[in-house]
Amino acid sequence: MSKRTGHFARERDDFYPTPEGPVRPLLPHLATGTRFVEPCAGDGALRGHLEAAGHVCVFAYDINPRSTRIAKRDALTHEVRLRSPKPFTFITNPPWKRDILHPLIMHLSDQAPTWLLFEADWAHTVQAVPFADRLRKIVSVGRVRWIAGSKSDGKDNCAWYLFDQPDPTAVSSQFFLRQPKTQIGPAPVESLKARSITRVWADEISNNFESEVQP
Image 1: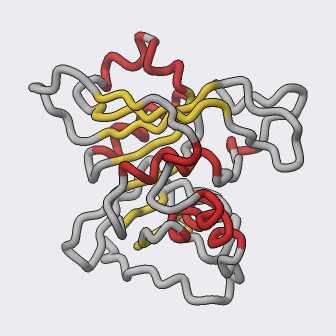
Image 2: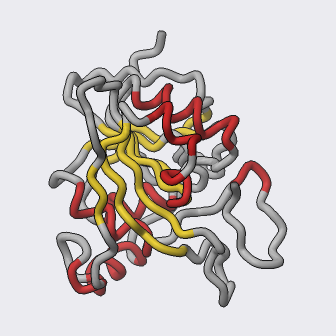
């Protein structure tokens, strides 16, 4: 129930910056220029990969932000209110602890479609049953190398899960197998990687967030 990586100690707050690799299988499932909110943004790594692929971050926050480009909010209680009426999607790599993950699925998907990256085995447990009417897609990712500089991948296979508001008529979820790297994403892997590396990360650069309507 954690991002297990051999003998490495577990990170505080389950903080594991999202590498570029597991983002690639998600890209074919996002509309061009998807407007997204990142509610467990950490240092902004996932946001950067998605922006490099042409998607638009309209707000990013974290209970313990690690960049001044990230607002301080609690994802379990905060309700996103944007000035623009245009739809958005939550996309995040959340903590895997069940006392956080399960309430987070409910809270976020009550507001907007929600893509979450966590371990694939969850779908095969009874824990997933209460969320069956919210689950729309499962996109296989495989093992992820969470620790920078490590030679080992994590011990858990991972997947992207798409949740939405409950639909009692839903009878099944779509499952997407892993694809060859050459078939993943709207742009060649080399191009996406280059764009991620050259992304400007300086905190003083404008974050271009839309203004939130505060309660």
